[in-house]
Length: 172
Image (cartoon, rainbow, N blue to C red; front, side, top):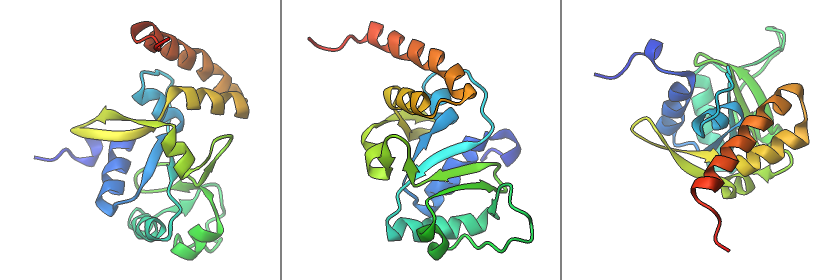
């Protein structure tokens, strides 16, 4: 029997939704930290998404399904999460039926989906895997952005990197 939405985490809900729609994405931000052993609490799901036309079509259909609205925008601001809107924008912050969702078409200082995907790895998640931005890239992002919460994450990310290096040293 499938789990109810009440017992699933926001990331589990979002991943299931994206898989159902066939959307290409990489988990970034706080959830990427958590999936790689970090303990910092995070309350939204941050994703880098492929901006190809076919992926935008699938994403737009999915966003309508979860009642995506622009986070922080007045309720009377007209917004439709359709392909045209997604093509004209790049980075979006949404409130959805699944919780807060940040979709980034461009991630500073790395770049677009293809560049982010090249610095990602598969990690176990639920009954399968999910593509997650690697620790080294997360560290570069946190150093580049430099917000207080990013600085707090850096020590933990560096410790994760050191533990991985200790367990699997790089070849000479």
